[in-house]
Each structure stands twice: as C-alpha cells, then as structure tokens.
Length: 334
Image (tube, rainbow, N blue to C red; front, side, top):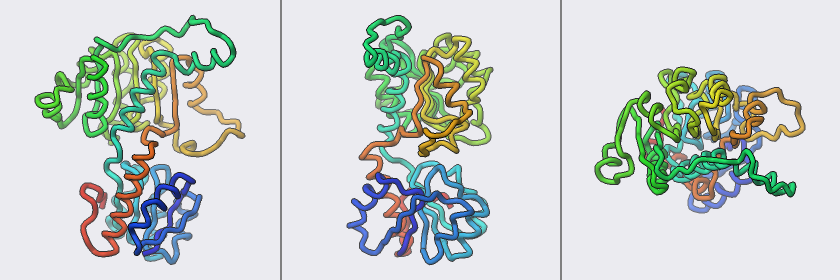
C-alpha cells in the first residue's frame, strides 16, 4: 500500500520511519507540500494520503483525490475541521484521525502557558538576558488555594484537572456530558457547574471543548464580562472557541489578567510556517504586544510520546484498510 504523506517535516519523517519497520506492507513517500486542491494531483498512483490539521481537505480536494482512485484520507491529528466530511461520505472516501495522543502533553502545555503568562516568566527571562534584574511588572498570582475552571473534561481536560488538583486548587468542571468518575472516584473535580457559574467563580480557566456551531465564540464579550477581574485564561483547544477581539478588549480592560494561547482564530496561514522574513499585519502581533500574554504555534501536543502515538495509530489505520479489518476504535470520521 502506497501512501503520500503531505506537509512532512523532519520530525514527521523521524517518528513515522521509526514505526514503519513494524508495517512491511506499507510504503510512505513524503512531500513538504501541504494538501489542497492545487496539490491533490500529486497523489496520482497512490492508495491513500496522509494530511494534517492545517491542510485544505475541502470538497474540491476530495473530488480530485477520488478521481485518482484515493479512497482513504489519514488525518494525523485529532481534529478534522479541515475535512468536508459530508462530501467525503458522498464520495465514499474513508477519513480517519488520531482521537487521542498523549492528552497529558496538551494538559501540561496548558498549565505551562498559564503559569508563564501569570508569572511573566517570558518577560523575566528576557530581562535577565539583558542584565536587568528588576522585578517591577512581573508580579503574578499564587494558584494554590484558587479555583480552576476546566471547560471540557474529556481526556485532555481530565488530565488538566489532575494537574490543578496537584497544585492544591479547587476544580470546577463544565461539560455537556460530565464525567462523574472524576468527582466520585478520582476526586479531581470538586463539582460540575454551568458555564456562567464556572466563569464567575474561577481564577484560572482553560478551554478543552470541541469546536462546533454551538461552541463557536463561546468566549465573547458577555462571557468575559462574567469572569473574575484578573482571571488567568488559557486556550489549547480551538481558536474558534474565542472571539479574538473580545479577548483583546478583556485584556485591555484588566478582566483577563494573563492569557496563554496555543491556538487562535487567525492562525490558519501561520500554523507551522516560518514567516519571519515577512511583514505580517496580524492579530498575533497585537496579542504578543501585551506583557501578560504568551503565545505558541499549535505545539501543545508536541512531545516525542505524542509523535510516536500519532504515527502508530495512523499506520494501524492504514494497515487495517489495506487488510479489510477494523480501524482503530473511535478513529473513524467517515
């Protein structure tokens, strides 16, 4: 089975090649080009393609792939926002994903972002490099004894609940489908509340909800207005969960005391791209101008363990398709 791997970086090659020895019937060719309607024709002669969250797996892309006999799209990520699932179903193209890869990695990154922004570690580091040892403007908040609000308590959110509990925090959860085991058995969630109560009571808020039409811009001016003044806000979920302009207004007003962002609405053109030689008029520059904001580029998942799991599940699904067996549980999109 021949797979064309789009958007390959050196770490992708390393992680997939390390696992490929266990899959003698699979062959991967790598291209640095991302998948979109203009590059779909590169898949001529292949049996499947492997794509990532920042690619364009739109209706046109899928139709071109189908025309070349491609019936399998392997998304090496948990999200499938980039895929036109309805068209894939109509074309009878199977789409798989990696439903969970090291949720602890993302949860750890979320806490790291929150603490970096809260304690102004990024600013302190720059000062020390310049022989400036003053502490003015670097004061933060002690998290012990404070309240954490975790929006979405799936695997990632649950992992962050455990971290927050280890910090000595009271943990509130908010989820359309509460995981009562986190309350009754693990004792890492003190109680489940609705969004409004979570906003009102939390000193630290982290988003781990799915992005859909109901959750789009769930963090808007109204939601921020309900939060405590000076709240620490973290988003490692999806950029569309937050109205960026409302967030900026919240930072300026002081409602948001610190913000750690691994995702944001306008990131599509930037994700995993080196644009350092360009003059970019972007919301990123505005956000980074605030001393209490820390931003990273969709890297919360980025650990060796997570890369290994992504490769393994993706290759398991490719092998299952080639042999006509079941895909990895919960990995099938359509």
